[in-house]
Amino acid sequence: MTSLDYFRSGPSGPWRIVSIDGFRGEALPRAERLDIAAEAAQPAEAPCWTLKGVAGHARYATRRELDMLGATQASLGRREATCAALIPIRKSQAWWNLAQDERRVIFEETSHHTAIGTAYLPAVARRLYHCRDLGEPFDFLTWFEFAPEHAAAFDALVAALRATPEWGYVEREVDIRLVWDPAASHQAASPKS
Amino acid sequence: MTSLDYFRSGPSGPWRIVSIDGFRGEALPRAERLDIAAEAAQPAEAPCWTLKGVAGHARYATRRELDMLGATQASLGRREATCAALIPIRKSQAWWNLAQDERRVIFEETSHHTAIGTAYLPAVARRLYHCRDLGEPFDFLTWFEFAPEHAAAFDALVAALRATPEWGYVEREVDIRLVWDPAASHQAASPKS
Image (cartoon, one colour):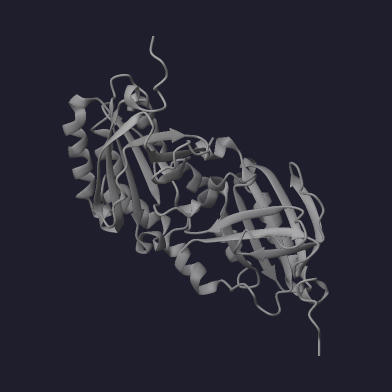
């Protein structure tokens, strides 16, 4: 099934935003916290920005790659994974003008996108969202979760991907880092006994 | 660029609906006319049903196929192409669970989808819209235009595709046939001098 999620920044939400960097192109405005919800309904406070995407079927992975990922990847929501990253990306028109076989060659045979990611499993859990068809300012959102001791490995993963030929087609990329901090959020500020 | 279009049925619109058949699964309610617009704004009369989709990049075609299509296919809006078909399709979860290489094999190497379509170029012009990510009841909408003398060829094209292994994954398909008839529509009923 497809799953539509909303990433809403603002004063509340269980994830505290540590940094927002524009790796390529325009960054996003600074915000304090992030909330992830399946509904468009806004919290009482106006959000700073909202990004949405659909987690659906794989666009490039082969059966062999999907089976390998299925056997190795970690699920989201692990208790120890208190660090997260949200990386919205837009690719150029030149990318979208390519045929499927040309995109596949750049994605995997040349850039080894899945192979690079696999080297960091199961430490880094991820979910890819597509948003190009939704009229969003980005084509993809990727949400990553990892434990603090894997933060350096995550930085290495991101650096490895950015060094690939595929990244020559990335025209906007924002790098948002977060930590799990629900106790201090408005939403989780219910009375503690 | 991606292009979002709305197919709105109701009492007005330049295309008169000749028939609506549920080829597989539930059909759509009977309606008189169809209007195609880039905005969600509704006409004065309430629409009967509205379908929307995004015409974007090709999902399976190789460079060789795209070049061949680019050299052969006709554009929409030809004066003589007064017949049209709108065919909304939903594929099964089993299809979407397949990997890209498995879907490609079924789509082209086994079912010869592009090759079959090519046999009817340039008589039949088409545009494919994706709508799965939009939360629509269908995954794709395809809009076809052809001259009346090619109506039998169009029926043969549709029958050939429905006989392929790929169609085993189609769980809902509606076949809507239309004719270009702007003079009788409300929208075009401006004073005639």
